[in-house]
Length: 242
Ligand code: SF4
Ligand code: SF4
Image (cartoon, rainbow, N blue to C red; front, side, top):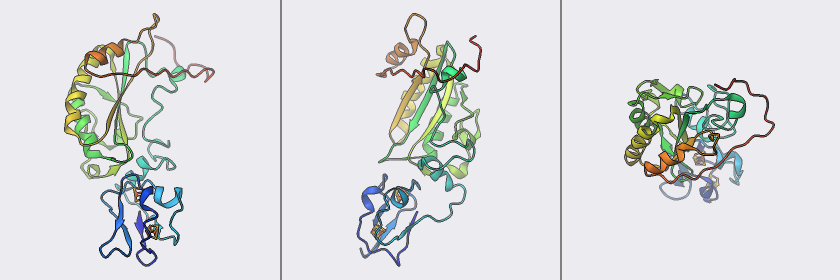
């Protein structure tokens, strides 16, 4: 996002709308400017608020890889790779139909960044490479997957590493028996990145009403807060139970 210096009157009305604090007064203080390194192209200052009294804020054409900022940070924009909006996938939300998470499997979603801090793909690479050493398979439908030069090692395309976004998610699925190892790596790698970091665990409830992943997470030093997702009448299953 850019500010037209010929139009801007330096009123600062747009400042509170930026979730990463990228808008500031330029030298001299009579006009404002946007820190291009920090701006995640979320569009809030431009179209959500329509706050600028003189229409000084404008969106230039974003070339690759900068356009990734918008794909991940502006929920009104679709990812060309997935044709979906948002940062991740449906995860467990449609599991009744997709059967993506079977019994004995655990889904892991690592959410990096949040409004107020954001994250860079360099952070995601750090996390992905640490976990990839365990031989996990990353979710191919997640838009982060196409940014990996080598999904086996979690190495990202070097060209995207400095691109900043509000938030992005690394998704993977492992046998429940492997979850303890994954969580140990997550604990360790969390100390190496400088942004908000939340961990989602996805698991089906066993027939006796228990969810073994909760105890595994607690043993690994996490404090899980279980939530359920029940989609009554969503549709007929497209899979056969193993
Ligand atoms: S597009 Fe978003 S991140 Fe960039 S300056 Fe506007 S509000 Fe801030
Ligand atoms: S609202 Fe418009 S005029 Fe006011 S500081 Fe922001 S860009 Fe400049």
